[in-house]
Image (cartoon, rainbow over all chains, first blue to last red; front, top):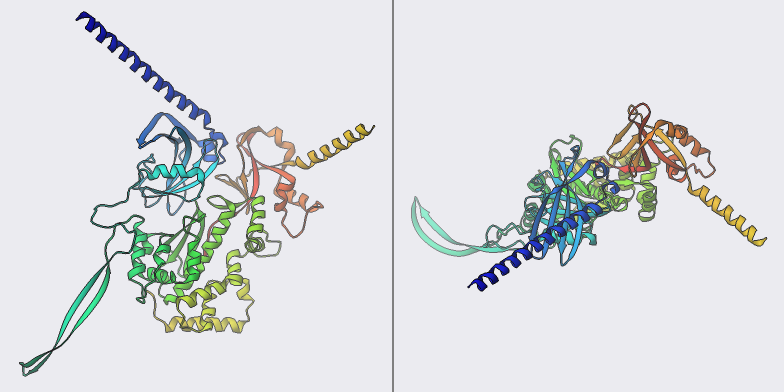
Length: 480
Length: 127
């Protein structure tokens, strides 16, 4: 008995010793990893000054998460002096975080700068709970190399920079992403779901005299078939789904624009836009224009360096139809004036195309700048000259290289007046082919009357264009 | 003899190359009344500069000799034989100079920022 007790005591002591050894090696391993992270992080090498000089990592509090074979350790990073950004669509606060991800024995570390959209919940300080978050992560290596940007939409991560270095991080974030399905009864919006409703109406001829029915005769039965949208659950952005459905079912002229829905989810739509029936109808119909599609496709997040947002404002000046903002954090915003929609649909289509051309020019400039905003140094200006000689020429002539005695002008409008009006005319004709060439030509000048090209037109021609536009506006019903 | 000539020629080439690489240091004294510094961008009238690298604590005496201003720098560029009148002088900054801004933090010292000229497209287009 005592021998058995001795064996048991010995086994217990051995187990205790082994447990202590394992625990201690685990702790040592963690300390080593932490020290390695500390050694690898070189904040001073970041070209982003706020990161280089104004942030510190809280090494004492690591958030650890494990899912499948992936282990994530996250450290909160705080700004010493909180900075705020001024933006109409981003929250003022920025967040920073250091993330270490280990999978299959391989470890990858990232430093992220987080921008949250205004309509998003605040960043939850973990990449594992992003279901209510909308915004972007600027991702850096620990020695300050900018790896690119990941866009987050309710937990769904998209590697918008298409940088291979970000694939692993995006995939890790998507491990925690689930569709917002509330019920299994509703199918996902991955196709077009419809229900066919048949309504039968029997028609009878009733002959009466002084209130007295003389005869009732059956004539025929009229069957009306309606195809109605069947509700489906959002696998993506709610607004994009509204637009998708609108594209399929609510086009103003009743035509079906197959293939349009694929284009509609390439843009970010503010509810102010998607709830505006006039703009949605025009946008939907424009989706049927191959020229407009070509421009829109350039913002497909799979291929684009920029994101495009459509919104509506009621505070723009009365004489402004719309405005397009230069990219901030890769986002270009087209804002329509809610108070200037009392125009024919074709006129609004013209505004759409005009703004799309601005957005496209900004996108091209951004692709050369290689940053979240458009900023060129001398080398990048040279690259602009090589990649887009026309844009380089216009920016040099009208903005960057204004020589003494010359007045600054708007490079984009000057370029548009000279080279893009044919594209506007083509789009307008694809939108509505019932008008005369003079009408399309005249409408294409809208928004370009401050340009040198317009001022060079003979006064008679200018007056003729203004008269055609005025007649067109008076003779056609307004969109809103 | 031949070896000596070769060494002499090599030295000459090396010296010439070194002369081409090293640019003249120009320091602009930051004046908050006429200039702005926002995030990492210095703006002097409508000319913008982005600072590259980190700021350095520097004594005023050490940069005194390199002090200049944009007008003087532009005038110097215009006089150079490489200058082409079709472009404004600021397109030549990086060819000839290493530009710095000095922001005084007290009487005798301040922060020195190495900068490069940048052209910014911001704001919005209105239709």
